[in-house]
Amino acid sequence: MTDRGFRPWPGHVVIVGGGTAGWLAAMMLSDVARRRQTGTRVTVIESSRIGVIGVGEGSTAVFRQMLRHFGLDEGEFLAETGATIKYGIRHRDWRRKGHSYDGPIDDPHLVTGRVRLDAYAVAAGRSVTEAHLFQHLLNGQKAPVAEREGRQIPVGPFDHAYHFDQALVGRWLRRKARGIALIDDQVTGIETGEAGIAALRLEAGGG
Ligand SMILES: Cc1cc2nc3c(=O)[nH]c(=O)nc-3n(C[C@H](O)[C@H](O)[C@H](O)COP(=O)(O)OP(=O)(O)OC[C@H]3O[C@@H](n4cnc5c(N)ncnc54)[C@H](O)[C@@H]3O)c2cc1C
Image 1 (spheres, helix red, strand yellow):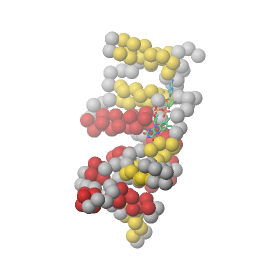
Image 2: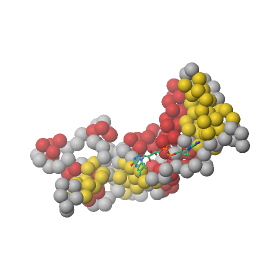
Image 3: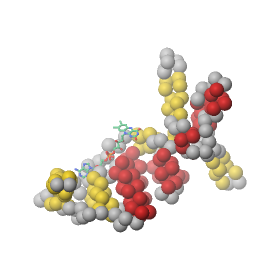
Image 4: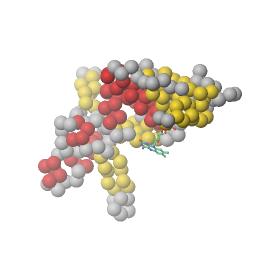
């Protein structure tokens, strides 16, 4: 197979690698370009012959905000990727053997912009985790929603995080991405010019 050059044109962003990192970057860039009407095209080059790292990955609450921003359904995300809701991180045997500490992932003030941590409880000497709704949900092994007349209602304004298989989420994001070109090929090298990378060498030529 002969390596051939793939030369992006001005206003064309090419992302090499299509795991969660690649597809999230592509979706965000494409979204900004659409909103600002820059005419920028986004292409992802990934190789079906080279897998993703495929680790279990923990997000922050920003991931949930991102789902909402792109109009992606959380229920579908959880069902199709097997992701799980993550309230915090349990540090077992933290200070000494037998002592454990649950740390929240995000400060609720940062992730809602409206609700602050219960500062009165903290000032009264209670731990930060005790003052956080997620700790109570974690202790009771509860979901962050209540069922009312067949509808699911959020129990608070907070955005939770997730833990997921990044290979499955990468594939799900690829299915959900709109207006992004995909090239399944292997980058074998680059050609540089005065402004940096001028072209990518692709194994099959970018078809
Ligand atoms: C053990 C472990 C735990 C982690 N935990 C977390 C965590 O909790 N939270 C978190 O945010 N991050 C975590 N990370 C980091 C995160 O998983 C990865 O850094 C990130 O998702 C990897 O994204 P990536 O796009 O770099 O690689 P990948 O998702 O592995 O994707 C690589 C992509 O590049 C393509 N590719 C590779 N070579 C070529 C080529 N020559 N030509 C064309 N395409 C090519 C592949 O086809 C694939 O699509 C963890 C990483 C590890 C190893």
